[in-house]
Length: 238
Ligand SMILES: CC(=O)[C@@H](O)[C@H](O)COP(=O)(O)O
Ligand SMILES: NCC(=O)COP(=O)(O)O
Image (cartoon, rainbow, N blue to C red; front, side, top):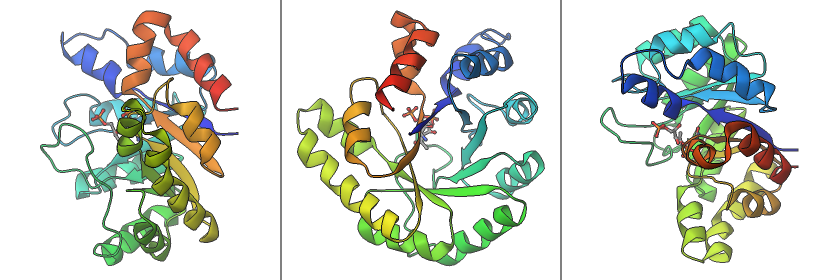
């Protein structure tokens, strides 16, 4: 079974657009879990344009499933994650001004840095995952950092799928996943996954442990409702 972790960044974007507390993130996270999602993901960015650091702290005592915090391990982020002690931290090499995540780690170039930061999180009992492109060499590099898992950056797959090139666009993900399995790395995936492409992705990736989905899931919920959409994902992830 593949777990569904719902990324609630977009709900925070909506809330922040008016400055009040609607939608209420705490209630939303509880509802999302009660609808069957197996995790909550947040990705606080340095400018706090959606999830704020305070949100990440407030959610600590609310999330009863798996709590996944994503971000670039700058000192402020590392300190926050160590204080919160979520189930998992996902390290993403995003620039301060990035609109959204747009690349995986170069795990060879940043091996020593990643190894150190991963050791720090693991020493606090936090599972680690690092965001990587679907590239066998990057997966091999990830294994050398000591991380528990990788998160495959799925934007290129989602784009190919949309353009009708699903077989071509999944191949590098299958190769990367096989290498991860060989190296005993757990496999997560995320970015631009949707109700349309998730079944094909899941069926082709051996031992896919978790997907984190935000943007499409919230957009789909505008038409179909959050509870329905979560259940539609769970059905496709069986
Ligand atoms: C790590 C990743 O893949 C991203 O999709 C991210 O978590 C979403 O971040 P934004 O909501 O800021 O686009
Ligand atoms: N790690 C990916 C994530 O949390 C959600 O990405 P997206 O579905 O908002 O593209």
